[in-house]
Figure 1 (cartoon, helix red, strand yellow):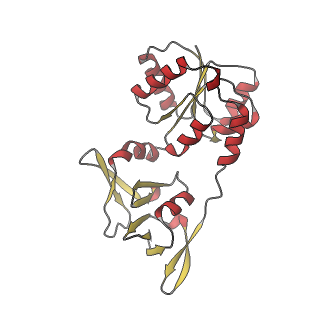
Figure 2 (tube, helix red, strand yellow; figure 1 turned 180 degrees about the vertical axis):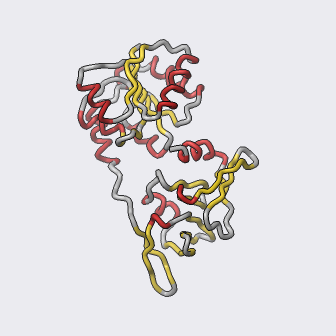
Figure 3 (cartoon, one colour; figure 1 turned 45 degrees about the vertical axis):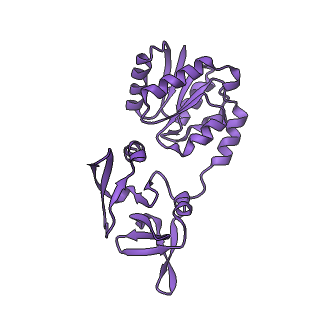
Length: 250
C-alpha cells in the first residue's frame, strides 16, 4: 500500500505512523509533505499514492488549494483539529474525516472503510475545485460596532478578550471595559477568526490572547484564567475539552 501523508506537524505525522503500525496496516510511505506548495510539486512529478492522509490546514494554506493546481485521484482521509471543516470534507466524497487528536479506534474504522471502498470514494478534482471556491474565507472583520450610552462606537476585534451571553444579551469585554454587542453569539462567532477565538461553551467565546492559565477542573473539564474576568467563570465544556486543547496548541 503506497501511502502519502500531507501534514505540517511532525509530531502528528509521527503519531499517525505509530498508530498505523498498531492497526497492523501495511504500507510503504512515499513522502511526508507539510505545505500546499510541496504537495503540488510532488503531484506534478507524476507520483501517485493508493491512500492519502491529508491535514486540511497546512503551513501555507488550506489543503483544498492543492486541487486547484493538480488532479488528485487517490482516496483521501482528511484530518484536522477544527471540526468546522467536517461537513465540507464529507461533501467531497473523502473516505473519512478524523478529528485531531486522532483516536486509535476511529483510525481503525477509517481504514476498514477505505478497504471496503471502491472508485466511487475517490475525490474528484472538479468537486474539490468547487469546494474550495465555496469555502474561501471571507475577509475577517477588523472592527465591531458596540453600544455606548445612547449611541454606538467601534472597537477593534483585536481588542476583544472574550464575549459572553447573559439573559439573551451579548457582551464583549476588552481591557478597557464591557460593551453590548447587537448580535447573537452565533452571528458574531461566524465572523471571527476561529484560529484566534474559540467558543468554549454555548455562552462564552474567548480570545487566545486572553488566556493566562489552563487548569484541570472536575468532571474531566478545564478551567481558564482569563484577562479581566470581571464576574465570569470560564470552564470549557467536557465535550469540547479535547478539541480546545488541540486549538490552543496550534
